[in-house]
Length: 262
Image (cartoon, rainbow, N blue to C red; front, side):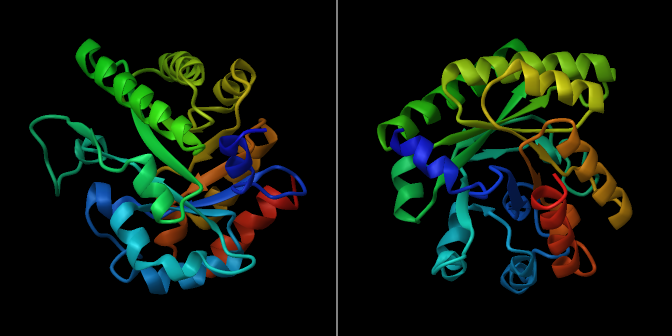
């Protein structure tokens, strides 16, 4: 077992190998929202649910290093790229073009105490942007491998309005390519149960499912249970935890779904 594999286990529960991860990098990518204006206060509540890891931007990780100290603390994952994709369809932050760049190196992530880095990969948007995304993912993976740091890749369909079966095809193809490039794990959007089952079978690395748009608490719990039953090894939920009316309650319940029900 190498350093990357060892660090990857720090993102998982030792008993079941599953991962309950909270994404708190949204302000870096989309601008501030409920729950991120005072992120330290919000995460104090989230931590009551004992997540296995927290995903943060580099700058926020510097300011909040205290939450990763001591026994029982979550692992730190650094969002290593900036990507305009989440803002493309926002009426508040309209963009005329899509762009993406690496914002953190493996050396910087390790200096912050990170156990992993994460990057996006927008697939089938355009041939030029596909090349950019895979080239950046490959560069980040090489950089991480040199320092024994796992790289988590996040493939996304390039067109959110395509048919579900096309989304599943794009995600499965991208997941396989990212695994071949050396990604240690995947964070993927949920399209439907059939697509997730097929994706999980298509790769050998852990597949974690992202939370997506805000939903009711009951819908969030139902979806998380379905995703775990479909073969996911964990969840990476952000807005539905960070922006919840009671983050501590949601965090505790998601922990139970990932680690006690599955």
